[in-house]
Image 1 (cartoon, rainbow, N blue to C red):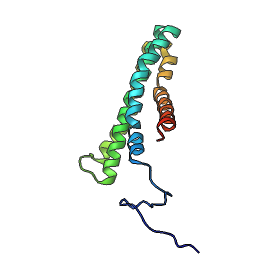
Image 2: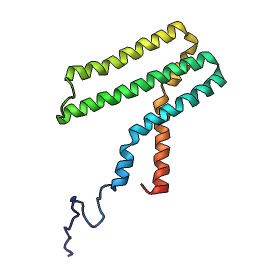
Image 3: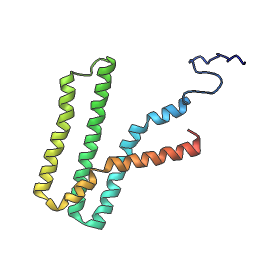
Image 4: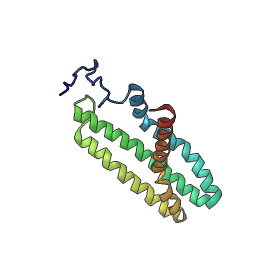
Length: 157
């Protein structure tokens, strides 16, 4: 019946509007999500610690700070390990050995276990605060999701 037009843009995307990739602005916006999640965590820590101190007391706030610190450090280390794995997978230089990447990945859990054991040994009353602090990345991801919805609605990304 109708012959389909195979005209395309310079980048190879079709002109007809179907299956077009996201615009460059949206791609740049969503590529920054990981950095924004880290910033959300840094902003949420003092807010949530002060609220927890006010509501549950000093012991719980200390546990919460420790849980937040463990969660934030874990997030940063996981980001580095994933970047090293990706560099190694695509063959980029300087990624390190496979054994080193695995060692750093496992070291995260060993250090978190040692820190949790120390906190529970010296301040067992802060267990609930510690466990709540470990959920800091979840709160930051929720903030990022809400921000992305806002940006999509307001700016059309």
